[in-house]
Structures are given as C-alpha cells and as structure tokens.
Length: 183
Image 1 (cartoon, rainbow, N blue to C red):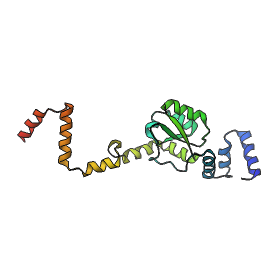
Image 2: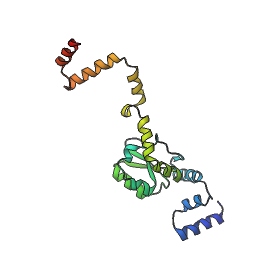
Image 3: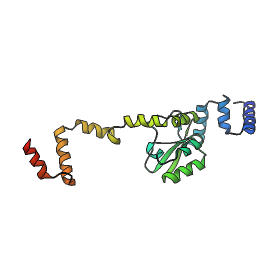
Image 4: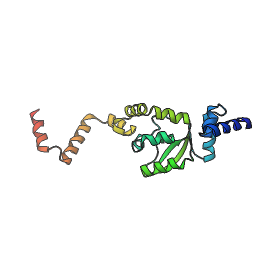
C-alpha cells in the first residue's frame, strides 16, 4: 500500500469513522488475507482464512450471547479444556477477550482470522452447527471408539450391556432369566 493510499484511507476513517483495517480492505488497497497474515505474524498467533464447522467450538458458543459474537466479530474455535481459542479480526480487542473469559471462565488465546471468514461463519452458524452435528458420530464419541464398537461382536456387546443394566439396578437378573426361559 502506498503512502497516498494510506492517506486516502485515513481521510475516509476521519470523515466516516470505522476501523482503518476494514477501510483499506474495502478500498482494495490490501487483501484481507494479507492483512490477516501480517497481523498474525506481528502478534505471534495463528491465522485462519476459512472457518469450517469442524473448527468451531459449539459448546462454548452456547455459553456466549449471539450479540457478543456479532458485536466483536469473534468465534470460539475448538481447543483444550483450559483455554478457548478465539478467532478474531483484531487480536488486540481486549474487551472481547475479557468478556469471553468472564462468561466461559477459561483463558482466551486470540487467533487472527479474516473478517470475511468470521462474518461468513457467523452468518451461517446454524447451518454449520447442523452439519457438524450430523457428522458427529454417536453423541460425540471419538472415531476410534465408534470403530471399536462397530468391530465388536454383537453378542459380546449385548452381554456387556445386560451386565451393566443389572449392576445399575435397571434390570433384575431374575426377571431377565425368566424372560429368557420363555423364549
């Protein structure tokens, strides 16, 4: 971006307000992806150019008001249990970080994402969650456990299930044996 373009963008910002980064992208002086990569490298954080349903932490989203996500243009991404990785166009937005930390009671690690990627994901959030839920195997079990379940002989699974039900008191052993004798 040239000095003249920066001056024009600054004049736009002064007269119309808004974020200078957004203005330079809208004017076409800098690509959103290039600006995101630069910000990520300066902040020493990761960068995202596309946000898919597999990346989004829907459990954390349910704890946050939608207005907060839209206001700050942020999106929680899948992460460890002790912290939340927060996709954000501005990793220096301390107000957003503090609000999320307070609401989820976990630390927040900023990750830079393009404004376009965040807007697109927020706009399609319900659809993305629906796609994620249909892909998620058996209530969130790991793929390895699902495969192990599929590979296990049915009779062995049935016996294990019955023993579990008897141990929990949900099924009487006497009643089970009586019914089995009737079949």
